[in-house]
Amino acid sequence: MKRVKQFFACLATVVIVGNHALIAQTSSGRDSGCLACHACEVPTKVNPCLKKCPRDEMVTVHHSAEATPDKIVLNRLEGSAALYEPVSFAHRSHAEMSEMSGNCVLCHHYNRPGAVLACSECHATDLASKNADLSKPSLKGAYHRECMKCHQECGLSTDCESCHAPKAGTSASVPETRAPGATVHPTKPGRLVIETANDDGKFVTFFHDDHADRFGLACSSCHTDERCAQCHKAAASASPIEHIAGGHDRCAPCHSVDDNCSQCHSNQPRARFDHLRTAGFDLRRFHSTLACTRCHGHTSNYKGLSRNCSACHTQWTSGSFDHSVTGLRLDETHAAMDCESCHLEKDFAKKPTCSSCHDDKSYPDAIPGTRVRSVRMKTL
Image 1 (cartoon, one colour):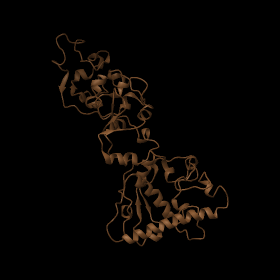
Image 2 (image 1 turned 90 degrees about the vertical axis):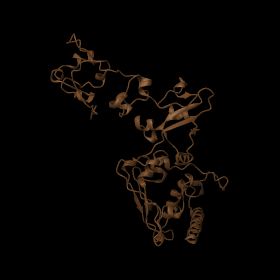
Image 3 (image 1 turned 120 degrees about the horizontal axis):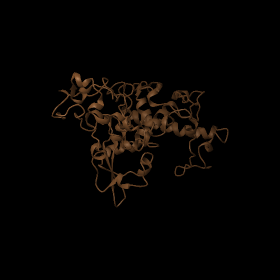
Image 4 (image 1 turned 135 degrees about the vertical axis):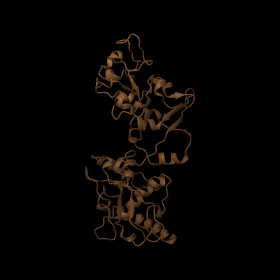
């Protein structure tokens, strides 16, 4: 097996170098020759003087990762069929990650507007064919170049068996089929402590899971034009203190970074945000599982809200609200009364009063019903 690997490595080098030379020799025009990619007449290994690839500007229609296939079976390489099984490629997982680093164009380059072509539409399976376009790598070369460059960056294995299952022997790691809507990053970082260069307020404590889960931010909301290695290599190091460049650039779209530095910067790492301590409103069991946007709306700067339940629950009327969810089932008499009879001015944050009807009773010494086990409301 070792000799087979060495043979294919040498063969790949010959094909790549040979094709590159043939492109230069057979080019009939200036735009299709070396100067199509190189800005100088004599590019070298030290100074290749590469031009910016135009493929980013050529894509005008983008597709969401959710609309892509979960897995794609790569089985067009006939020469490898004697050695390996077809490769099961986790396409949707890679499509999700690409949203943070350039989108589909990272792999699907030079497509017609709106189209996503199979690699074999442009890359020939056999460069020996008379119809083969020598200005493009073979299908095998395209596959390996696209896959291996990212795997090498991330410190992942590039051994053949990491993707290819041999015909005889141990199997490669084949990705499992995921259900629609399932993401490739089921586990997100929790608390990140970022050390800055500030003398006063050296630390910024960032709760990644809150931003992803509570605030409903997608990864691409903050992570743009990044390489996979920025997260994969960081996860491998598992350092408790992060040093992140350009922190303000990431935070500024949602947070004001021009004043009130102490809102984020402190001299010691901070504890997790507590709604009762900061806002004076205890989320308790009814609101603790809600996303912040359910109450505060889709805004970057959350402001204080009225603590009056009716400010949000405008549909609550006599007979429409199941009072048992509070732990108190109203008796027949009180169930027929308007909410304001006990909750003055519909201020449910305050203790209910009995004085509207009773001179000799007060809550909680007297209750208008029976204590029950509270249940979570299905809808709010």
